[in-house]
Length: 134
Image 1 (cartoon, one colour):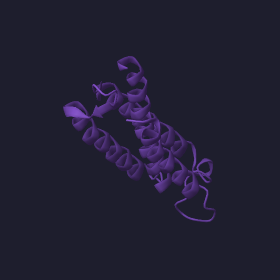
Image 2 (cartoon, one colour):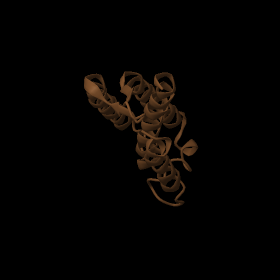
Image 3 (cartoon, helix red, strand yellow):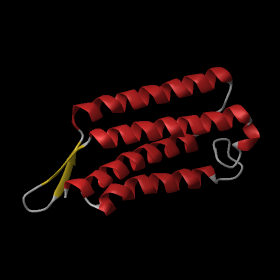
Image 4 (cartoon, one colour):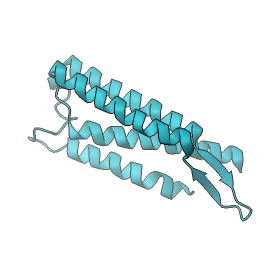
Protein backbone atom coordinates (compact mmCIF):
# COMPACT_ATOMS: atom_id res chain seq x y z
CA UNK A 1 0.00 0.00 0.00
CA UNK A 2 1.59 3.23 -1.16
CA UNK A 3 0.39 6.81 -1.37
CA UNK A 4 0.63 6.74 -5.14
CA UNK A 5 -1.38 3.54 -5.57
CA UNK A 6 -3.95 4.69 -3.05
CA UNK A 7 -4.75 8.08 -4.56
CA UNK A 8 -4.05 7.90 -8.32
CA UNK A 9 -7.34 6.21 -9.31
CA UNK A 10 -9.71 8.35 -7.20
CA UNK A 11 -7.86 11.51 -8.23
CA UNK A 12 -8.20 10.51 -11.88
CA UNK A 13 -11.94 9.92 -11.35
CA UNK A 14 -12.24 13.35 -9.75
CA UNK A 15 -10.43 14.97 -12.69
CA UNK A 16 -12.67 13.12 -15.15
CA UNK A 17 -15.75 14.34 -13.28
CA UNK A 18 -14.55 17.92 -13.43
CA UNK A 19 -13.73 17.54 -17.10
CA UNK A 20 -17.10 15.98 -17.94
CA UNK A 21 -18.81 18.64 -15.83
CA UNK A 22 -17.02 21.38 -17.65
CA UNK A 23 -18.14 20.41 -21.15
CA UNK A 24 -20.26 23.35 -22.20
CA UNK A 25 -23.52 22.84 -24.02
CA UNK A 26 -24.08 19.21 -23.13
CA UNK A 27 -27.22 18.00 -21.42
CA UNK A 28 -25.22 15.92 -18.99
CA UNK A 29 -22.59 18.39 -17.86
CA UNK A 30 -23.57 18.74 -14.19
CA UNK A 31 -21.36 21.28 -12.49
CA UNK A 32 -21.69 24.20 -14.87
CA UNK A 33 -25.48 24.25 -14.92
CA UNK A 34 -26.07 23.02 -11.37
CA UNK A 35 -27.20 26.33 -9.96
CA UNK A 36 -29.58 26.87 -12.87
CA UNK A 37 -31.44 23.69 -11.99
CA UNK A 38 -32.78 25.07 -8.72
CA UNK A 39 -32.32 24.55 -5.01
CA UNK A 40 -33.53 20.96 -5.04
CA UNK A 41 -30.79 19.98 -7.47
CA UNK A 42 -28.09 21.74 -5.46
CA UNK A 43 -29.37 20.13 -2.24
CA UNK A 44 -29.39 16.69 -3.88
CA UNK A 45 -25.85 17.25 -5.14
CA UNK A 46 -24.49 18.00 -1.67
CA UNK A 47 -26.56 15.34 0.08
CA UNK A 48 -25.33 12.70 -2.36
CA UNK A 49 -21.72 13.76 -1.86
CA UNK A 50 -22.14 13.82 1.94
CA UNK A 51 -23.62 10.31 1.96
CA UNK A 52 -20.89 8.88 -0.24
CA UNK A 53 -18.29 10.62 1.93
CA UNK A 54 -19.80 9.01 5.04
CA UNK A 55 -19.80 5.55 3.47
CA UNK A 56 -16.20 6.00 2.32
CA UNK A 57 -15.11 7.02 5.82
CA UNK A 58 -16.91 4.02 7.31
CA UNK A 59 -15.23 1.61 4.89
CA UNK A 60 -11.86 3.17 5.66
CA UNK A 61 -12.33 2.60 9.40
CA UNK A 62 -13.22 -1.09 8.98
CA UNK A 63 -10.54 -1.95 6.40
CA UNK A 64 -7.92 -4.28 7.84
CA UNK A 65 -4.42 -2.76 7.78
CA UNK A 66 -1.22 -4.52 8.83
CA UNK A 67 2.54 -4.52 8.33
CA UNK A 68 4.41 -7.59 7.10
CA UNK A 69 7.76 -8.60 8.58
CA UNK A 70 9.59 -6.97 5.65
CA UNK A 71 7.84 -3.63 6.35
CA UNK A 72 5.31 -3.87 3.53
CA UNK A 73 1.99 -2.32 4.50
CA UNK A 74 -1.06 -4.24 3.33
CA UNK A 75 -4.80 -3.73 3.51
CA UNK A 76 -7.80 -5.95 2.99
CA UNK A 77 -11.48 -5.11 2.84
CA UNK A 78 -13.01 -7.91 4.86
CA UNK A 79 -16.66 -8.72 5.55
CA UNK A 80 -17.74 -5.27 6.78
CA UNK A 81 -16.33 -3.54 3.72
CA UNK A 82 -18.03 -6.14 1.53
CA UNK A 83 -21.33 -5.32 3.25
CA UNK A 84 -20.85 -1.55 3.07
CA UNK A 85 -20.29 -1.47 -0.71
CA UNK A 86 -23.75 -2.83 -1.62
CA UNK A 87 -25.25 -0.54 1.01
CA UNK A 88 -23.44 2.40 -0.61
CA UNK A 89 -24.81 1.38 -4.01
CA UNK A 90 -28.30 0.91 -2.58
CA UNK A 91 -28.28 4.41 -1.11
CA UNK A 92 -27.04 5.70 -4.47
CA UNK A 93 -29.96 3.98 -6.20
CA UNK A 94 -32.29 5.54 -3.64
CA UNK A 95 -30.90 8.99 -4.39
CA UNK A 96 -31.45 8.37 -8.10
CA UNK A 97 -35.05 7.28 -7.44
CA UNK A 98 -35.77 10.33 -5.28
CA UNK A 99 -34.24 12.58 -7.92
CA UNK A 100 -36.27 10.98 -10.68
CA UNK A 101 -39.56 11.18 -8.77
CA UNK A 102 -38.85 14.80 -7.82
CA UNK A 103 -38.03 15.77 -11.37
CA UNK A 104 -34.48 16.73 -10.40
CA UNK A 105 -32.06 15.84 -13.17
CA UNK A 106 -28.96 13.92 -12.16
CA UNK A 107 -25.77 13.98 -14.12
CA UNK A 108 -22.91 11.69 -14.97
CA UNK A 109 -20.73 14.29 -13.27
CA UNK A 110 -22.43 13.65 -9.94
CA UNK A 111 -21.92 9.89 -10.23
CA UNK A 112 -18.22 10.30 -11.11
CA UNK A 113 -17.75 12.75 -8.24
CA UNK A 114 -19.50 10.43 -5.80
CA UNK A 115 -17.26 7.53 -6.78
CA UNK A 116 -14.15 9.71 -6.49
CA UNK A 117 -15.20 11.13 -3.11
CA UNK A 118 -16.12 7.77 -1.59
CA UNK A 119 -12.84 6.18 -2.70
CA UNK A 120 -10.78 9.19 -1.58
CA UNK A 121 -12.44 9.13 1.84
CA UNK A 122 -11.91 5.39 2.25
CA UNK A 123 -8.30 5.61 1.16
CA UNK A 124 -7.54 8.69 3.27
CA UNK A 125 -8.80 6.99 6.44
CA UNK A 126 -6.94 3.81 5.57
CA UNK A 127 -3.71 5.76 4.96
CA UNK A 128 -4.15 7.65 8.25
CA UNK A 129 -4.56 4.33 10.02
CA UNK A 130 -1.35 3.05 8.41
CA UNK A 131 0.56 5.70 10.37
CA UNK A 132 -0.76 4.20 13.60
CA UNK A 133 0.07 0.66 12.52
CA UNK A 134 3.65 1.32 11.41
